Structures are given as structure tokens and as C-alpha cells.
Image (cartoon, rainbow, N blue to C red):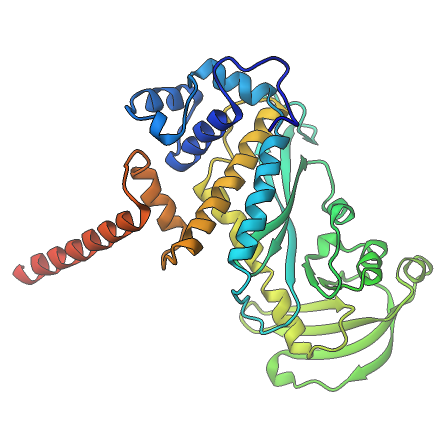
Length: 365
């Protein structure tokens, strides 16, 4: 925390107080800084919750404006390491020895007049949340926040690729020079091809068309730039999805896995879409308590920390509940001095009672 001091000493609000207040806002779906202040002032045991400072709208606004957001990015990295250890024995359902990561981004629209720094389009502002997701969990391994004008493919320049791991990428990231960096790192990628990709076939392998596969080929890029950017062989797999009626073409540098497994790996990329949907629906990352870049980044990183804490809580206590359910229980019991396991037991009992009550009422009709 001391590595990123504020411009002046905080008047009664430490980084810990700021984090707890903003995490409280995330968990209980507060609407504004005034709303946060009013709710916390109504609590008689803030000290027991760990809050030592004076939580006022002014103090919180100043802290969000001037305390460096990298404090909470660093905290998120600590929680990421803990969450990955907890979920290390989980399976991604692919039955692979390699680690599998999904890479994608989501756009958060903003008002141009209030967020002029978030460049996107002439009449629109936005920020992008670029994410590398460990599919065992799923846990965000690496994240980057940029303005909306930054192209997705630049996120690949920030990733330290792990040898032997598989990176699942959408076709918006198709850049053969960057894909060759993954090859040079002795890692693998699975990416959708674009229709205008020029190539010639070196070898074709037989496929079972009853599985949806249409072809499994070894190719090389045929254009001059393609040969420079990616001078080695690629594997091209065509797959017909009977559910959507779409024909999907994948490119990969992994020649050892069955062609159908490659298609299944790409299908698992959908987990990152579910992750983005979850955080947008359950956390406050679309409406912000401040308009500066520092305030927006602070709020997003604290939201990510809340997600990671809920994920860790789920694993530490062996809870057989969805993260949404856990967050709902926390939101209405945030001031209770009750062990979380007991809260879950109480809510489970109440649900059973409610079910029995409804059933009796139905029978009486």
C-alpha cells in the first residue's frame, strides 16, 4: 500500500477503509457515494467490520480520485494467486494435461461528456476490460483496462505465454506475427480463422464427418506477408456445428491432439463470455461513483477483488452453491456477526421450510 501514496495524507481514510467501503458498495449494490455513507452510518459496529476511519462521501470521493488504483490491482494479484491455488485441482472438463486459457475483452459503454478521457468513437466513450481467464475455476489470471479505442490484439503483447499451455482466442485477435510469438514461447493457440486467410494445403487427414468435422489439414500461409509473419506450418480444422448451423474454421499450432478435441477446446472459450456476463450482472462495473480515470479503474479493480474473494470463499468452505447465490446471501447479511457456514445452513433451512409451506398450501387447495 505504501508504494502508491496519495498526493496528501488521507484525512481519516486509509486504503483499507476505502477498500472495505467500496467492497461493501459492490456486495450490497449501492447507488452512490451518499448511499454508501448513509448505509454505513446506520451500522453500529463498523469497528468490528474492520473500518477504522470516517467514511464520508467527501473522503471517499477524494480517495477514489487520488489514491493510485494500482494499490487494488496489486491486491487483486494476491487474490488471483490464492484463488488459483484453491482451484488447482479442479478440472476444465477437457481431460487435458495442458493448462487452457481463454483470452477476450468486454466493452463498458460510458457517457462521452462525463468521461472524455475514455476515447472510443466520435460520439461515444467506453473502456475495455481485457482478460486472460484460467478455465479451471474460472479465475482471471491477467487483466488490463484500456480505453475503448485500443484494439483487442494489443493485449497479446502484454501476456507472458507459458510453455505447454493452450490459449483459446477469438478471430478478432488474428495477427500472425503475434501468434508466432506464442509458437516461439513453445505454447499453443486455438483461434478462429478469417475467410480471407490465404493458404495452401500441404497435407489432408481423414475425418469422421458424423462428428461434425469437415477437414483436418496441414497448411502454410501463401501471401508474402503471411510467410514473413508466420513462417512455419499451421493446422486448419473445419467443423460444422449442427446446433447453430454454422461452419467454423480453426487454426492451431497443436498437431498432437485429435481434431475434435481442438473444436471442443474452442467451445470452452464460452466460459469467458459467462465470466463477463456474471460480473456485469452482479457487480457494479457499468455505473461509476466517480468520473476520473483513477476512480473508474479503482472501482473495477475492487469489483474484481470482490469476485475473487467470493470465489475463494466458495472453495475454502466447500460450498455447493453458485457464486451468485453466495453474493445474494452476503448482500443481505453483511452486518451480521454470524459465521458464513451458519448463514448458509440457515438459508438452506428457510428454503426447505418455504418449499414445504408452499406444498401444503397447494395441497389444501
